[in-house]
Length: 182
View 1 (cartoon, rainbow, N blue to C red):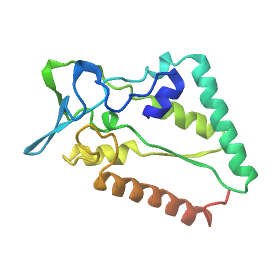
View 2: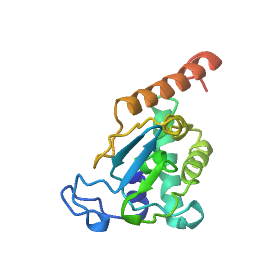
View 3: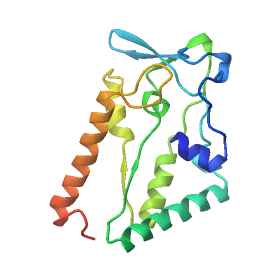
């Protein structure tokens, strides 16, 4: 999600070792993941993408063009295109966080996966949103991302994503007689 946001907005990447928003040094937690009987310090980016309603027309056009080209290229190679929406850590953990230092962070826009799905579907690309299965783990108090200053999935998160992707592919293969069938 961060890469898509930066691509759409032109925002520069965060440079490792730089002081993140709020003046915290790398490795410093700016929030706490609250699970049953546990509070785990976590580091999250405070930068958020705009709500879908405020996406600039040029950004929507770029997304549309990119997915159209992806779909066409996959089909030209004899493949059936699929797209998995991988949410960022903040999107998955929202609702289970306490922010440190009284920092008030606006809610993460929820419509972006829908915009991507709508555009993918328009171009005949199968879409899998990985947000719901990761949020289900969060809802029962399981952390699916590395905690401090690392935006990547941990072992549970990777297992959840793998299980979701293989399940979607297997259901499609069972229902249609093969993954590449139209």
